[in-house]
Length: 160
Image 1 (cartoon, one colour):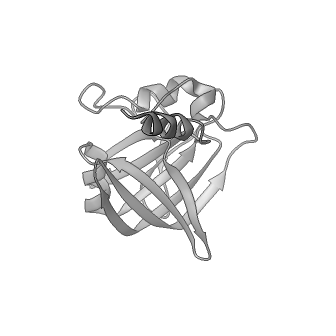
Image 2 (cartoon, rainbow, N blue to C red):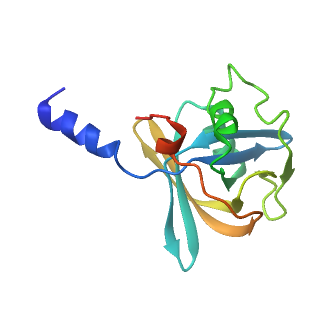
């Protein structure tokens, strides 16, 4: 790795990233995973983008069903974020043990204990090398509690 790409990588690790649970469904199947590359990309209409690993089970579910939820982890939910970050092959029933409901607007799973959530319908899909970028129209949401959101740095995680 060149000196400039090492410096660029170090700079990227200083970007502020939140940690989110992305809920997906396809038919009767439900899944959730931890994501940090999530951003609001438009306010009128409200749209959210999330980057998802191409080879993950959830990317296929999002393509098939066209819906997802974004749940904001609280600062005290590091263990939940770590569990949902595991690959589906190692943790096939990631939602087991976590209270969740199907969101009323999309049916995508919404975790009951998170600070807030939005539900989205996929508007655009863009293939990006090792990730797929899903841009979704926000069609519902809610705030359940006050608190501080969990960040990548605050959790002690490192990605990318």
